[in-house]
Length: 127
Image (cartoon, rainbow, N blue to C red; front, side, top):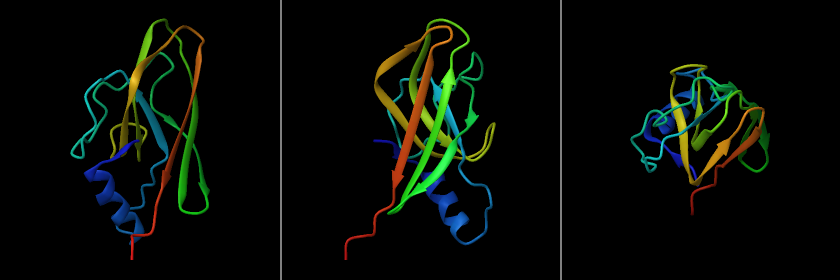
């Protein structure tokens, strides 16, 4: 399950009251293997080329309280390791909302595609 990072929590609060107007619409892949942590602000080793660079996702809302990001990456080189994924509010740099480290490495070869889907569900606090 992805870790909703501290900076992501801050930015969601700023989006809710209009202090920020930068929605989280970008998905990024990386090869880093560092464990997830709340204080992370970036992927450990983000891919920036070879067809795996950060990209604009197809975003949607699914009731109740589900935000969804989908993107298909196509590798343009061989032996590209994917170990982590993050959701961001900018095409480069920007703030990270959440990060997930996969349990095992997915290796992509030339022209192989990888479709990623991230779903975040907001639940009402227990009363």
